[in-house]
Image (cartoon, rainbow, N blue to C red; front, top):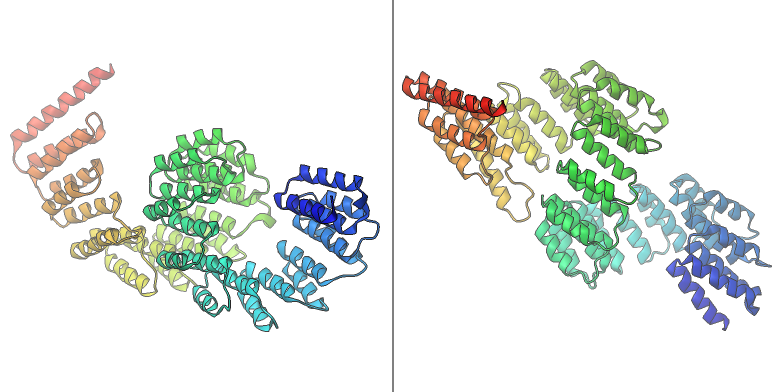
Length: 627
């Protein structure tokens, strides 16, 4: 076989990353007359690097009689591709001469390990820079979100190619700078698939899915990555129908596409379909397993999550952390601790989840011990926030303030926890002061402050004022925002405003692709609000017209209002519904007792006695059944 044909085999083997085939080809090369060809030996070293074996790449290099500058650079690339930074440095400093590719490899090696200063030092020392050098340094800054430095390099570059423009565009896209993305995309002298995909991603990350879809539609030849980005965006926003339609257009879905469909169904609350998709996936990776387990966890289906965990071949840290959260949410702290022990070493995320689980269920001392045990070098802002929230949840204001001021840095979560801590301890003015002092506020911060006021008597108008401010700063209220709003209207006697806001919430649910829709909790709050204001007919009609099967809570809320306003007939209907829903338990008996009192208060003694007789009969039957 001639050298050109052999070179083709070696290149194809490297692309396939087939290590056993690589060994076979190199053995053939050593037996052949071309064994002294430095060109083929260099290709073999490069092949081994791509197949994940830096050790074999080094073995090939050592057998080259007179390694040239390409040999050294290929060795560096093999080490860099497999994470051996120290060996990359050694080769760089040992090689007798360096070409631009060697310098570029060193820059990329440092950048891939997050050592941006060393990468920049090498870049500044380069005797001759080419477009690859500039682009490598620009990409290093962009991947760290350092877009000011990336833009500065871009502006200084003597020559730019499409890869350079894409590096800057992708950096802005992943950093959330949509306006800059739009400008760069429009200014690009030429675009390829990477350019279009970066723009789709930029719109998707900002929640502008219509613009993401229109960009996708305008793309000359969408590739599988294009489909994957848009599909994942639809899935994350629970836009199930759009996800289904897009998925049908994909000729050969990859694992990312399949996993996105699992997410889409799960986010839409259809766990059965999510599981059906999951079961159809031919080759599942850990990400896919974790998405399905997390879907069960988020839905509170602990039994299903646990069953799937036992089926998973090799649960990883993400899996065990998801299970820890599930056990913690369910109050199974012993099982949560067992999951924690599976991956406690070197996983700060799991430590934070365990601290939160203890705190949520009132085990503040255990949370303190765990936080104190976590090495200082491993504590991040999330760890501190978990402990801060632990004090807040347990109304330990002094402890919360101590942790807050001891934190090396604060973020919006830290400040929001302090708002919550003060509000839970009844210090509403202090909570408002902390809220006002926040350097930045998220929707969660606004919701926390609104909830604090909505739970306090006489503060309904303040909640409405905060809601208006929230919208003025450009934030979109979510279901929790409306929950605080309706709760404030209910407790503040602001029924007209409450009806107006509820009407707006219902209207949002009919808007195409809106993620807002009234939940059972919203309807229950409205029933309570109408009942408090004496609008019992409207309250009953709302219970009967809600898009869910009315439950004991809704009918019970109406019954309480009927007692307040002595509406005997409507109280009787509410009770019959409660008895039908809960025929043998405490709720039905409590409802009957309340109905008897309503009849008695209205002077309808005969009906009151009849209800009492019915209640005694139910109690006797239940007692006989238990004996």
